[in-house]
Length: 114
Image (cartoon, rainbow, N blue to C red; front, side):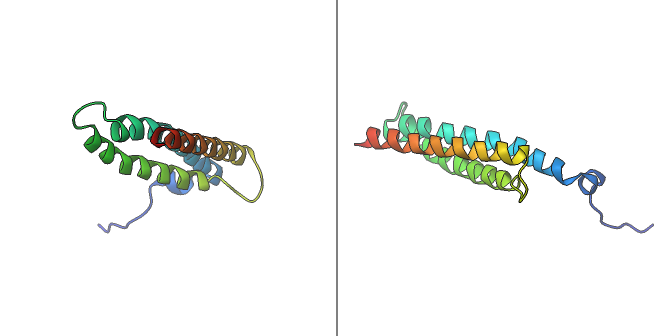
């Protein structure tokens, strides 16, 4: 019997909008939760440690948050197309919320450091 390599049937048969929808549903929580978790990790674990080994835990969590943020943004980038539709609207709204979170995080960190 001869075995051939092939893609899974659901991956090749999925329409493009379903792939974009899946990318949106996975990308939004990754982006928003990691962006929202950055300030508590930075302030309570690194700048003002809450327990004895807090800095070690904080420095271990920062690469994880960075990876999830980067992966989430790459998933959101898959949602944009040339023609505008609802998935592009939601992805764009998520990017705007991410920018607001980043600006607020910068202000909070600047006030916590200075």
